[in-house]
Image (cartoon, rainbow, N blue to C red; front, side, top):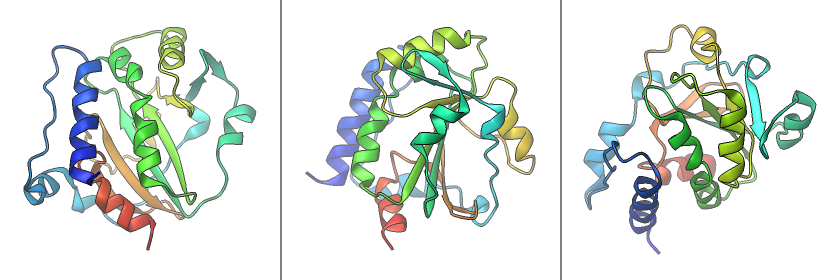
Amino acid sequence: MSINRIIIIVIAVWSAVSCGNRTAKTVGTDQSADVKATVNTELTGMTIDLPLQRFHAVKDGMVIPPEEWKTYYQEKEYSIIIYFGTGGCTVCEMKACHLWDDFIDEIDSDNVNYYFVSRPEDGTPLNVLAAVVNESYFSLPVFVDTDNAFMDANNGLPAIDTHTSFLLDKDGRVLFSGDAWKNIAIIKMLVRK
């Protein structure tokens, strides 16, 4: 199955489980325009700090302590940060977390850590978010940034949209930033060099 077809299927499923007031993302047959619109080259080379100690981690219906979530991560050559939940329906985003398992399977690299960071602006309580992630059967912890720690730690970072993704090297430098779903081929190429 081609990458374009996989992306279209994933986006269709995504839109089906997301809020009804959201518009569905579409991918045309000519991805060059989509890539230009969804890759932020001005951030390439910038160092991103991920202040995990300031986040709450949720998995399996509960808030989990650092000693537990740290078991999911070892030192690897790359990290992918998926930042979501800003300006939208946080619960809707959390319900769709399991779709990222397909993304991880598609990247198919043992050399990548995945960090899912949600910045809920709608006041959804942490225990509700934990329950929603549990219902999605997502395989990794989701880090909930209740006090805007990510943006505070990266004060040179421009305002970012929901679903902004960052591919970082082992030193935290940005190799790619943009919409991971629309640029899965680029990410695969970068982590398999």
